[in-house]
Every structure is written in C-alpha cells, then in structure tokens.
Image 1 (cartoon, rainbow, N blue to C red):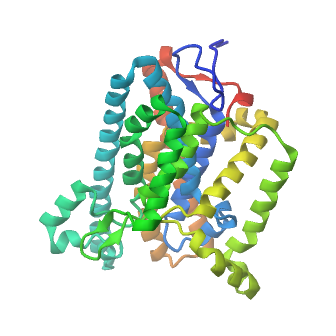
Image 2 (cartoon, rainbow, N blue to C red):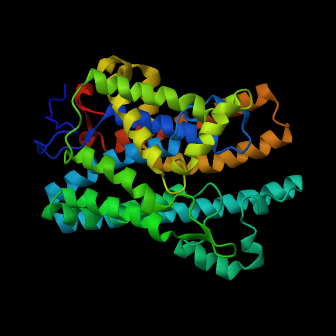
Length: 392
C-alpha cells in the first residue's frame, strides 16, 4: 500500500514530500466536464438538454476551468516550491507551448474535416465553422491563426487556458510578495475588463472578441488556484452555508432551463433581468458566485460519499480527467463528426442517442489507452492517490 503523505489542496501546510499526487474527485469532475463539453459542442444536439449544465448559471466550461485552477495549484504550484522559480517558469512555458501546438493542430484537422464533409455532402461546413476565411485570405488566416487572433467556432477554450498558464509565473512572483496581491490584481483586471471593454479579437474580418474572454475567466481560474494552494482557507463544513448554497442552486435551475420559459413567461422575464450578470464571454459575476456555491456542494458531497470514487464507473471518468488535453482535443473533432452524421440522419432521436453514447465511449477508451500506456512506461513514478476526505 502506498503510504506517501499528502497535503490537502485546501490546506495552508506545505507538502511533506515531492511525490506527485492525484486527487480523485477533482479528476472525476474534470472528466464529467469533458463529456458534457463533447455533448454540448455538437450543434443542435437534442440530448444536450439533458445535461445538468442546463440547470444552473454555469456550464461544463466553468466546471472545467475551476477544476483546472485547482489542478494547476496542486501540480505547478508545488513544482515552483520544490524545484525553484525558474525551473517552474520553464515547466510552465513548456506546457503553454504544448497547448499552443495542440490548439493549432486541432484547427488544421478541424478545417480538413469541414472540407471533407463539404465534398461528401455539398454543405458549406467551413463557412458554418467560420473557417471560410482560409479560402478568401489564406496567408492572413494563417498569420492570425498563429497570433491567436483568429479562432474558429467551438475552439476557444485552449487559447483562454494558454493565457491563464502564461501569466502563472507573474502570479507566483506576486504571491511571494503577498498572497492577497494575487486576488487583488485578479479582481482589478476583472473590473477593468468591464470598465474599458478589454478583450482579444477572434475574427479579424468581423472584429468579434474571444468567446472566452481571458480578462474575465482568469478570476474564476485564480480563485480556484488560491483555494487549491491553501492561500484562502476553505470554508469549514457549515450546515447554514450548505443550505444557502443548495437554495441558491435550486433557484437558478428553473431560471436556467429554457424549455420551461415557454410555459412560464414569468421565468423568462426574470431571466432577462439577470442576463447581464450571466453572460458567458466575460464570465459574469453570477456565474462565478454559482460556480463557488456548486463547488462547496460538490466538495461536501465528495467527502460524505468518498466510496463512490472507488467504483468502476467513477474511475472511468477519473482517468479521463487525468488526460484532459488529448481527450478534449479529440472531443473537439468528434463533436464535428457527430454533427455531420446527425444532420444526415435529420436528428432522429434514437440514432442521435447512439451517436452520443459512441462518442463518449470513444473518449473514455482513449483515456484508458493513454492510462495503460503511461502505467507501462512509467510505473515506478506513477502518482499516488490522495485520501478522498482531503480533496475537493
């Protein structure tokens, strides 16, 4: 049995050793987020309405970003502590470059898929994905693609994540002056985004902003990072706080489920009133509040039902969360393939269900293949599993 000592991600204590540790619950919820992203990224997918992300102010992207902030704190934050600042900068830079190359590769493969689908069906899929810019201005398109100022539809998460990691060395440096500087500056950037409309361009022709504005999403990411680093003491178990979080999430459910709005016009009216505080592109304030409330509930549930994460089904999703980059990149391509097939069969209910299931199984299978390969190649240094009652 592995007896490596571990430090809770919400503790102020320093790690007792340098061995890598995986936290099952965080990886599990990342895996859940990846499956929901795949299903929600299939345009007009009739089964996306069953996703729990339709019952709240946030969706799978918020869940994924929050969990990623925790993971970066546990992995990169400890690396900076154990190996020194400049070694940490090199590791962070290497990861950013890896994400950058994966992003470019996914776009090129996605473009090839849209062209292939157009040849087979006669439908202008490149235009629908806003990739027809390659046809009109190929040299400019490639230039802006490398500059991250041209980002086709459904491919905006990785550029936002690259920005989060690229400023991590600055965040680490600020934390060594004072840890609260991180949140102060993060909040200042968030407010400045609203005051001066800070954003990056994702379409040079139309001037559209990035769908995931990093000036806004960085606040959710670094809130999770500070919690995972133990810089902010995690709220102790409190029944009143738990009840308040549950009530808040229950109120959000009917306001978020659009299908109810056709039958209850009052819900649609209330939703319209709060919509400015729910916009996804800037990660509006109510989204962040809801994400923190949901995180508190999920953490409480994880501790109370720790045996759940040892079940086979849970382990499948946990392994997916451990290989989020290749799984996400593959899901971006699979979602388009699923979309083309669904259009061909005119979104018949049962066949689309089968397509969703097959896509999810392929992603789970990919993660398990990568998992087995890593175990075989690097079995001696494979990460230990932290006790469930100490993690998110």
